[in-house]
Image 1 (cartoon, rainbow, N blue to C red):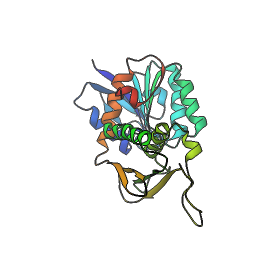
Image 2: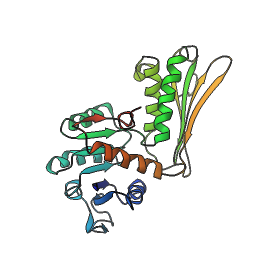
Image 3: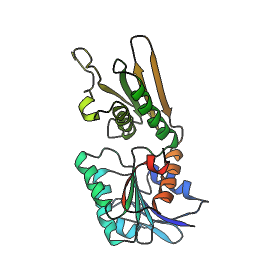
Image 4: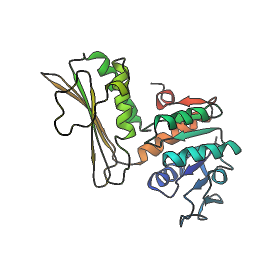
Length: 260
């Protein structure tokens, strides 16, 4: 069965990765959006569809909306989708506040939404391994999460790093917000027992490097993932789109999609 998708930010790096991943598969790119004033507005996507400056126009003939843009743009798009036939949305936008996450949950009352900080199969398996390690290693093992991305990324830590932190917190049956430590800088004093630390680096064109370290007095366990091609996120998002199109309204994660 052919699934019609509409892509937010279709002219961007992730948007083009989604277009390329959809080519030659059972997906049709039925629409795409860009910011008002973009030079790409009006450009033909294929199958007679044009790039629009409105999510409502872009999604007019789509079954699933895919959005990897910015928090404000994503929320504005979900609001506009109320007037379309879209039955599911894939949201990979990062940098959302707790209040904005709640707004997405509200939209999930009417359509199926798969929300994830990373749609890579490898990353989602990594997250599962981190949760297991945290559950099995005692509190005398310190947890540190590090990530590096390209110089253009505007939020930190990355959505994937936060997914990893949440997994570690679940494994220890605590809340990440209670155990997340501020960045180490200056005279910080000794490390708090049970804390979950984050380190961030930015530079060049790095797609995404992530690592979780479990550190005891005697040994270090490192679990990591390196993205070599943005296509892994696009393929995962399309897999989620196919799955979400058949689901009831609700807020889902890649754990649900992959039955992890």
